[in-house]
Length: 265
Image (cartoon, rainbow, N blue to C red):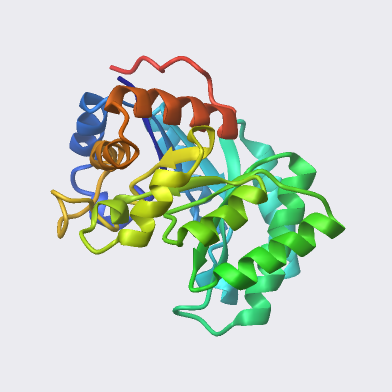
């Protein structure tokens, strides 16, 4: 059985002391590929080094909405150049809107729109962060689609209701579920996980955050994506092996990954 963790942050300091052991655990758990998201472009060379160390790791480049204080028009050029500089870049992001922790609304829209234009120009999918912003996100994307054309991508660590989920499915997005789908009171997330069409479904950890049950309260790590997959399979009343095969295929389709597992020592 093969799984893909479609959203990790293993460059964070919390993994510094035992990353080799973390990697062995994800390999033992059948994690064939990982997609490393990017918070800001200054991480790029670290992500390259991680991909050198772990050949199953592919990565993105972009600017997180909570880091828009770093945004300048020149940064758009930097992101585009970095995305074109390494074949292991399989997405732009994470990008999007976060109105839970930030009131820099206009800056978020400016950075998000610019990164969508780059993704469209390079034909790369986007990894979208959306927190307390489902309605403005859907409206912004609908307007972008009308004016610029569609962009492929995924709503990562999705926490919306089935109604909100359908808005983004209608825009062509994949929907990715994290450890939050295992939380006892996450009824709307669980309902969304049950209704997403099988060909649009992804799983992730968003590690080191949001460790799933039964690891809740611990540092999250890629091996724990199996717990996410188990819960989603239960909610959808399908065998874990089928859920793993489907999400593996979906991830390969979205990020244009090789269809066969990388053999690692």
